[in-house]
Image (cartoon, rainbow, N blue to C red; front, top):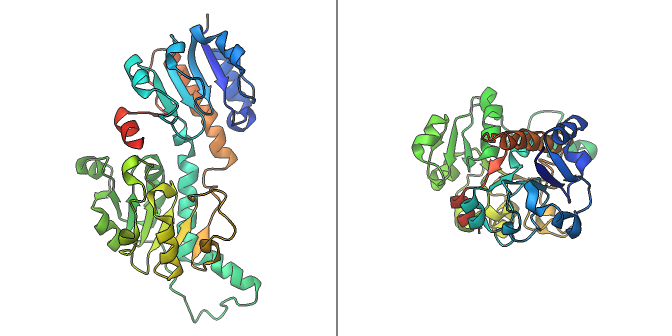
Length: 334
């Protein structure tokens, strides 16, 4: 008899995150309950609570985990972990329930976008395109406007999680030395990954390309404040990819407006960003509408890694592809 698995991905749509082949694999390894784009009705869930082994969900809205006596895995397809305000993590850890996020599915796509944004900013691709369209293209090539290549430039990663580990190999052809600030990892570990651990001031003052890749926690809200941002040299490119939570966005806007450095941004404190926000009028920043991971390839990766890890769990093996919540991270995340 197959184990019961609740498939309740709303707000995601099944066809956006599962290929037909992966959905077929899912149904072949489990007794799938619900499996529709609309949220599962309470009465449907109540009928299978006692037998449910895993829940594939868009967000946790099922109450107390004690109502699921056989539950072994909570598999989020939103891209993050459930809020501790909604899910009892201590109960999950005590019972050995794995709380899992599909965030790694987005890593390659976000990294690719980050590389593209960095090159677009350093070579002024967006700005030159705009000038071309109004007859102000620099055909004479007598003025280079502070453009420079990525090759051999010092790169700094703020955070060395999944996004950073996806971006690092993309930079290899450019021969960039990479330095990292991440208080979650020991210097020894970072050195084994081929990067140089540094303090935040060293990273900000010496990096020509700064990638903000850190996940949000209680301790790093607006960590990159006005004082930190003021240390960035004028010839640097600041690329904000993970969450705006990490940055004092008002201070960042002011720094960019003063021409302190160039930036490329994909995430914002309010989304959609109001049309009248001052940053939208500035000439030295590239703005992307939180679309680094919003691509069909990345979304379909979700279904693949969910099914792969579910198969492992149902066979008593260790899942390898989704991100599994750790108590230390959840405590700091708040």
